[in-house]
Amino acid sequence: MAEQNILTGDLAVLEQIISDIKEHKKNKEQLEKLNEIAKNLTKNIDVSERELKEEIDARVKESIASICSGYNKAIEDEKIKLKDIQGQRDKAKMAGVKERIANETRDLRNENSSLNKEIKEAFKAERVPMYCSSRFYMAMFQTKGVADAAVYTLIMLLLFLIIPSAGCFIPGFPQWGFVLYYFILSTLVISAGKHIYYKTMVCHREVISAARETKNKIRNNRKKIKKIEKRIRSDKNEEMYGLGDYDYKINEIHDRISKIEGEKTCALQEFENTAKPDIIAEIEGRNRGPIDNMRAELSKKQEECSSLDALVKEQRIYISSNYEAYLGRDFMSAEKLEELRAIMKSQAAATVGQAIAVYKDKR
Image 1 (cartoon, rainbow, N blue to C red):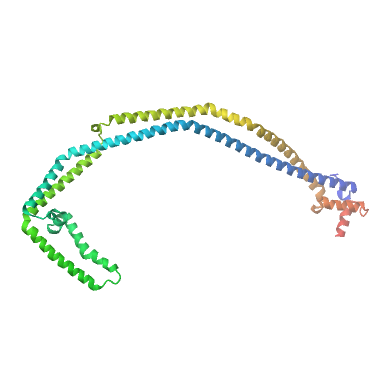
Image 2: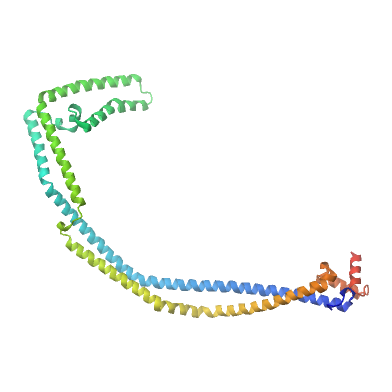
């Protein structure tokens, strides 16, 4: 048939064309079904493989957690003991440090106590008010050095600037209020300052000056005490504190923790080498059969698809070359070919070409 002009063919030729096209269509539909089946099989295999892996991972994870549970509990108990011993050691060291500081600063603290006592006795004998030995008094009436100057300046700023400035934030505060404040403050500062200065510095200058010198000695001793405290607290040598028993217990606990961790590692290694392969084999033994069956079915369907796909392509080439080239794309549907056959059966046309002409005339 491929070697003849089908336009001159009779009804038998047309029926062969219809049969070939229907068969091609049927094969295409069958190929689509096979491809869909193969696609679903591939999807089911992927899902089954993923579920199999998830089941294996979950079982392995659960088994590892069970193995680690006992060892982790033992390690945690040892760490609690370690924390307790370390706390006791720290307390013992702190007590030792405090005792060492007390011993090494005893002379300086005793000297300060004696110096304070001398000031009190001198002030009492001369009837000097005790406030004359305060830092505030020294800064206001016997200013010496940067520290006293800073205290004096801060007090002046507080009285003459900061406090009055607060009045600016009070709604309706009168201007004469600032004048009244400065007048009263100046009067108090001048009169009270003059009175205090006369009663103290004028009458007891030597005693107050001597007290200031004594205060300087006390301050210097305090600086020395702080330096000694800093040196002792930063000293890395702990031999004098008698912490050997605590260190021995701490080392014992560290050794036990290391031993437990080693046993845990060995148990996990043993699990990897023996139990884990058995678990995997057992789970795969229950699930691998259905998966392998699906793989075999997939392979079979893929082979059928490949064969049918080759046939469909061959049929398509044949139809295009031998039928479509003569009839045109419009007449490549079974429905239109059936109409041509009806025309030929009605004796309206003897050849395929004549049937096409009749069909077109009707349109």
